[in-house]
Image 1 (tube, one colour):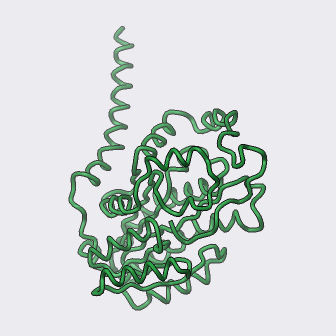
Image 2: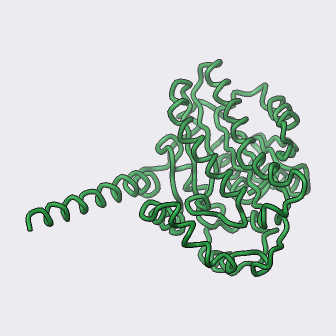
Image 3: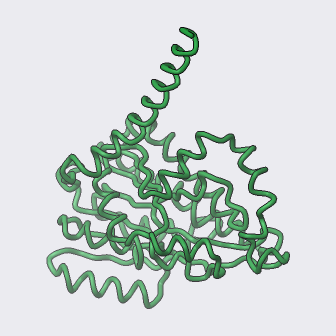
Length: 322
């Protein structure tokens, strides 16, 4: 009996430790501590936001400008970028809003990195938000040309290159900085029919976790954010799936995600936002990943584009927004 009670207490202690260490820091950052003064903390008045023409990126730009920080928006050179920039300038005439039209699907990265480097060369860049994302849905075998590789380029490689830019500048200029990645809770579980999205977001989260340690030597705080479903145009080109319709009912607004993100900068290395992120994170820790995959296989037709008929294409238009 003593052995069983000891085992029970041990299990309870392990679960309690997990819950406290998981929810405790997030709760403090999101609901207890006041929002940090990023302008004072990092001694900078400039931030770069990729995918800042809509969704979470545009909301980040608005809140950064509210905090007295100028923004450089890197996104597709289209009407959304022009419209967002005009709106932000009208709302914040005392601040500077720069735009850089870029295509983050460039596999080499040279074109957009040259443009971003040039646009920020004359300012003390201290904050970088690698926020751009593109959701491609469908069977990987049906993805045309370099579509799958381009999806990874937008979601993962662009963030890696931006990280190098900020880390090197902060190191060489001996200044503090912050690097924030917008990842996704989608990679906590298998992501069939959105394989490149889930895989690229897993890469982003792993990269951020490692850079949070490396960045300390350069004076750079690193944060990766895993939002739950957010009402943005990320899903505009996605097939009409029942699961997306369900998540839409409980989705967060881009502004709510942006506000939560800024509260965590410099305080956490990783934060999960929303019930879906919390739930799938805990499930992934309770059930082995391989077992979870095998459990999903028999129900694959429920999630397959076109009802699992074998088609579905590459889904989703490449965008530099989120």
